[in-house]
Image (spheres, rainbow, N blue to C red):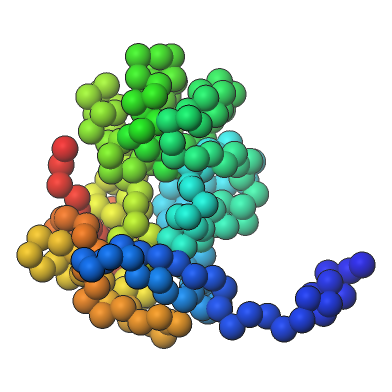
Amino acid sequence: MSRTTMLAAAGPRAAVSGIGTVVGPEGPVDYEIGWSELKREEAWADRLLDAWGMGAGQRVLVIIANHEYAWAGPLLTAVRARRAVYTPAEPYGWDARRLTTFLRMEEVAAVIGLSGETVQAVAGSETIERLRAVPRLVVRPDARGPLRGEGIEASVIGPVGPALGLECPERAGLHVDPAEWGLDVIDGTVRLTSRADRAHAFSAFDTGVEGTLAEGPCGCGLPGPRVVLPRD
């Protein structure tokens, strides 16, 4: 059976690509994700990988939980599209052995999404020493402080509400797609407003992310303001 006949047998495509959940001031908010914005988010993720010099054949560990695919899935899709040799992992202590095994491979190019829980699970082990040699280390905010305590600097990745936030090698704040999202800071937290047409529109959504905005140009060349998180 060909791809064409399989798609025909499956029937018409769903109106939306999926459902995401984001936590707001009043609790969880479910939102629809349209096909058009999914493609735009994948294209933005590809630009972020350009800033990191990611290419085909590079070994990459991508640490994303299933429930995080609404904001992080486009990045994984972009990694696949570049034909990187990627390994998936979960951001929990019980999956720390996968990190250790991955870092024993030769020519590790990147670790993306490392969590504080995983760092705690491998503290004092050879894994911490191997992390020093990773040329592209991108971690969650709760992992940055513990790694800095070990003398390891890293860029940060994390959700800014429903949006992907990712630092480039400049480590000058989280890049958020400026064509897709407008950013503001009110009472110390980042607010997000959708700019492009989306299945679910957001207006001054309180992301709960504490930080400031860096408006100046970034050395990597990516456009738009960046979310600067408090320093640990």
